[in-house]
Image (cartoon, rainbow, N blue to C red; front, side, top):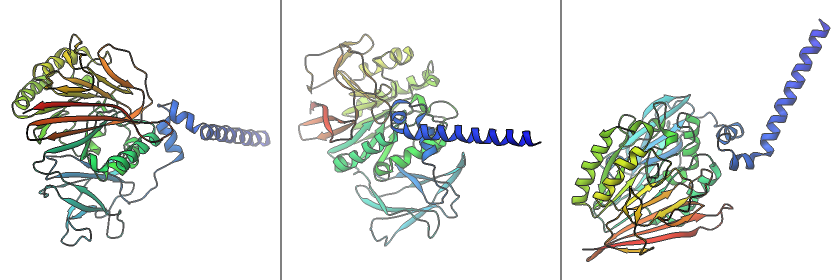
Length: 430
């Protein structure tokens, strides 16, 4: 009996020593794991930074739904159920003459996810809003601005692949807001938002990290390969026009078309999306000055199913799509105008300033927090940079011309000042 007790005590001591050693090892190697091991990082971060149990709203995000000028989606999560989840909003910072709307709630993987849709908003107005769980559990007052019904200037931000490095994506988001708060009205994420789309903790962490942006600016999100499949929680977490049953859509604003596509395995050999794209591009080519397309996988590279290169690329050539934004490759890359996107025939007579452009330009923007990749030195590439980055796009209409201005900014790995890594203009004369 005494021997058995000693054996049990010995096992407990050895087990405790092994556990403590592993924890200390993880703690001491935090930075290297964060930067080098994208698979281990999300769970490691959860180990050191568990989300506290609370009914306090967290991870607040605004999403584009129905339109940019008269409605908005607001979502958040709690770890304890809220007794009266709602959003109060007003045109006045003191909340005089305010409105409130109850939120819908879903229980997902031990968390409570809330959604509220604000409709019939006035265009080109700043609204103040506050998210609460009950009469005492409230977040600070935040704000957003609806877009004008019609404007000569449209500004938005594009970025992608934010998956694993939380400090990187948070710092990048802070730099969005510190340097360009007044230079973009909404953002578009080109996919691979998190590393495992089926794990709710990763969505919670992402929205906590990026609340500095999404709490104030509307977001549009493209499905990446890390969010694909029937088990993804992307559509549980984001109140959008796309749903788990319909993962592509389009909208126009200010004579500009925005087309969101699904380039994952589920859409391979599914001509439904292709036929819809053909009809949408035809319609948009008749009424819009420029049309932008967003999908996760880069069409000019091998890291995409050939089906999309064979079916989608010819449509972009046929209907003169202006710019195709992609992610997936973790760097920045811009092509020359592609005369034939399928055969990779390009026009390199001009590199930065284009007039009356009729051939599409392809941009890879995949540096928002995932480990960076190198790149192939393809002849069709006009600019490239291995850097954490984002892209600011501005479309300005004047009396006799309309101009696209695109600037890509890189963030050094030491989080120093932003650096301009690429810029182009595209001018069409009326």
